[in-house]
Image (cartoon, rainbow, N blue to C red; front, side):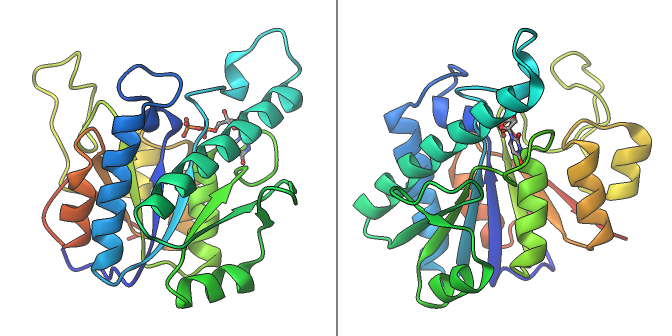
Amino acid sequence: MDLDFKRVVIKLSGEALSGGVGHGLHDETIEKICKSVKDVYDLGIQICIVVGGGNFWRGRSSENIERSTSDHMGMLATIINSLRLQATLENLGIPTRVQTAINVHEVAEPFIKRKAERHLEKGRIVIFGAGTGMPYFSTDTTAALRAAEMNADVILLGKTGTDGVYDCDPNKFDNAKKFDELTYIEILNRGLGIMDATATSLCMDNNIPLVVFGIDDPENLVRVAKGEKVGTIVRGK
Ligand code: UDP
């Protein structure tokens, strides 16, 4: 892989923390993921993490709750996950800061780009919680936004239940073909559901490379960071 890995944004879905159950937090799984994050950190790579909240709540999945209230619930869920990851990373000896897009002063710092940069320079991992702070957006879009703001070299998108981007659902079609490389415009044109369209467009417009890989085996994260050919690379052009 010809990508630079000096500063990365790792995007983890909430589901990735649930250990295959889909909801809640699974200690062993989180421990494994954080150990892999530590291996990447030990390579000298600056790490930002954006974590989702789907293991607790997804705004769009409720029919009875007004959407922005429901989305605020989802954003608060991402803060729980951020604190959970921070706790485990710090147990592993890695200084970590959580910055949130919704202010919760007693538990985390607000998102301040310059402060986040300083943390990275001082060897701290920065976890961005509460998504963008705005309803109707996703944490994939947050990963794209923070990657652009923080001048990250690449987004590492860990997916559960797949090991890359396919032309159709590999769980339904035996002849599904996995892409080694792809462009964002192809994702949009083919309607591939690997990220929502807002996140995909933001990555495309800002020319941010993305590696989509399977997080069910957390060691894939280290393989990707070492430049091994794992998953699918998505580029702007
Ligand atoms: N969310 C939001 N704005 C954001 C990011 C997230 O409103 O900028 C809400 C939204 O309701 C979403 C939930 O938080 O469903 C959890 O985020 P996401 O679905 O991206 O989590 P993941 O599927 O990655 O676990």
